Structure formats: structure tokens, C-alpha cells
Length: 38
Image 1: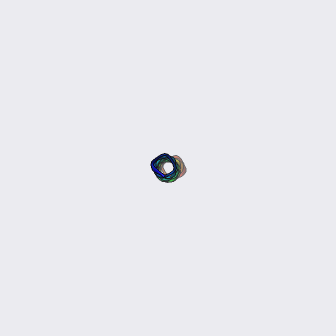
Image 2: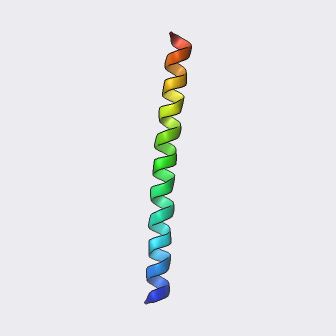
């Protein structure tokens, strides 16, 4: 049970980190694109 819970938590952490990283990257790209357009 402990191992399964650990794997489950690790998967959640990786998923959340990936989503946050993807969102930050998208925001940076949008900001850079807007600056270039201006």
C-alpha cells in the first residue's frame, strides 16, 4: 500500500509540475510574441 501511494503521489507531483511548466512556458511565449508584435 505504501509503495502504491508513493507512486501515486509521485505521478501527481510530476503531472502538476508538467502542467505548471507548460503554463509558464506558454505565458512566456505569449509575452515574447506580444513584444515582438509591438
